[in-house]
Length: 80
Image 1 (spheres, rainbow, N blue to C red):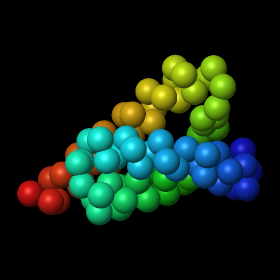
Image 2: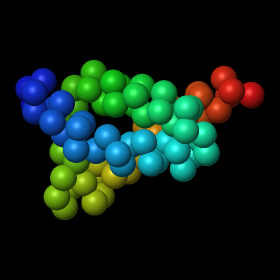
Image 3: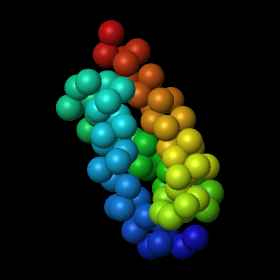
């Protein structure tokens, strides 16, 4: 997927990513930083991730939750 296409997909899920991070971290400032890091990680990843339609409901949703948990656990350990 080209850079512009990936950017559009990431813009579409930006709020979802923030909400996932906020739900895990319970801190607006940490969630903001974690969401930003997660979006950059997804952009750099290069996998063809399609965050819309039926595919999102299964594979991509699991990927997104797993990546959010990974990033947020790093932020939790730094905050303590």
